[in-house]
Image 1 (spheres, rainbow, N blue to C red):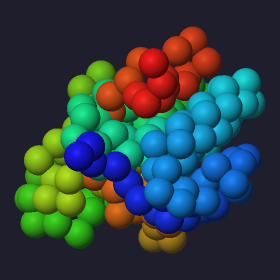
Image 2: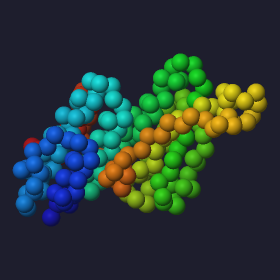
Image 3: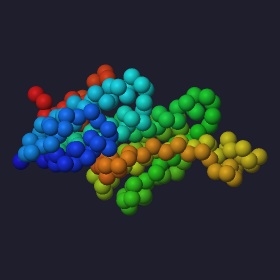
Image 4: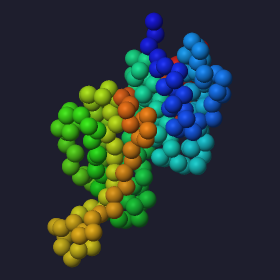
Length: 203
C-alpha cells in the first residue's frame, strides 16, 4: 500500500499554514488521497499568491510542508527543500544589496549529525553560491536546520574590527514553524512559473 500522511496530520498542517481547504474533503474518512490532493491544491494556490506578494518566508514555509509530504510518501524531496532554504536566505538580500556586510549562520536541528556539520558564520554571498543546507543525511529525515543572517563581525560598531557588537548583532532567523519543525527534507514534483508543485496524485 502506498505510504501517505494520515488525513489528520494533513488537516493539522493545513490549519497551521492557514490554507483555504475544503473541510469536507480534508475530513478524510478513509479517502486520504483526496485529502492529500486538496492540500496540494490549496498549498499551490497559497504559493502563487505568496509569489505575487514576493513573500519569501511564506513560500519557504509552504515548500517545507510539501517536502515533508513527499518524504512521507517515499519520493525525492531535496529539490523543494533546497528551494525553501534558498528563500530563507533571501531574507538577508536587502541588507546585502544595501552594501551592509552580512554573514549567513546556520541554526542546527536537534540531531547529532547536523550538529557535527560546519555551522560557522559565512559570508552571505558565499552561502548563496554554495549553500550548506539542507543536510540530506539529517537523522530526522527532513532536515529542519535553518538559516539566519547577521551583521558581519568586521562591521560591528564597536571601534574594534575583531570584536562583536557588545549589544549583539541583529540576527534574522528563518525557521519552519509548528508541524513544519518536525519535517524531514527533500523535494519532488515540478516547479511551475508560479512557484507551485504539481500534486503527485493527479494524473
